[in-house]
Length: 412
Image (cartoon, rainbow, N blue to C red):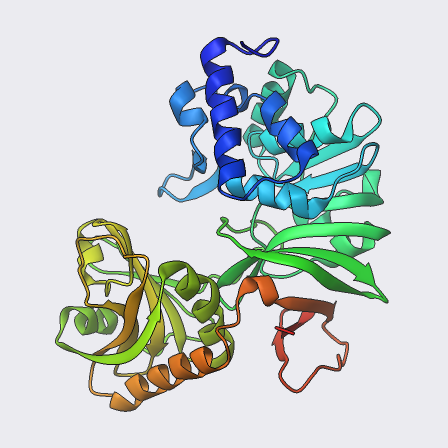
């Protein structure tokens, strides 16, 4: 039986998607569930088939001429997680930064009801217009979509009970804190040393404290608060990418020569899985090692990326440590480049170049991470202060300075 106004096949696929989100543990709030069951995603993705529109996948919706994706419809699983982190109540005023297709704004509007207000902002005029059209087609013409730089918020309608970003932010803009109600909530994907965490913050004594954090992966915010460009692209087809927070101590040609050259593997005898590696160990290395890098490859050149994570043969990603003459990356052992990672595997490190000390450092960090209990995102607590604030922290806390903000991280 189809929902009113939703064709039969679309309705069945929509309900099946929601059922999957519940089974996977990503959707637990009845109000968020009701929104997903009522708001038809396919109306916000009119160029896709119903099968494509109701997959639990992120859908790219705008690319630059060089192929870079700058807008998408987020994966429904992370949308559900973030909406639950947002803890919406009927009648609230909400600012969404990153309008995308308008689908997330429609879900928010459904939960808020007729007395609520949603303002969605995006930096591109064509994205804004498309979102307006999609929202009107779905019966949500009361959502206001405006063009502007989300780094500045939208002061014309402030203050807000809730602010949500559907793009990753490298820093916390002062405008978001200024435009948030004292009892409000800010939810955003936050980049912390190359690892993204979707964090729910609430104000407390002139700073923000986290209520929850979940791992995530979003494209970055553009405009005034865009992250520093720290990605080096190299290789004959420009299909290899290395990112560091520090200056890269090797040239593109040197990096390519290292990855094509001989290597040695060193075992750690530590058993883990891909989720734990990319959620927990990734952040551990980022906050403890200045030589930490992220490496990924696409297409034919992906074969030169050591196989840690390989969803498919044409895409691989790993991370590790880099020095002036050597690169040391995490790999799974035994490494099977053409196969996806098993649920658990033994960690090893692969050294390209002569610097055995680099391999020893990486192994020592893996052992320290394991000995500390493999601190994960579920245990992560973040306090965010203005950068000038001399934040007191526990002995085992980690301080990460941004342009505007000082983050203090601990794991309880």
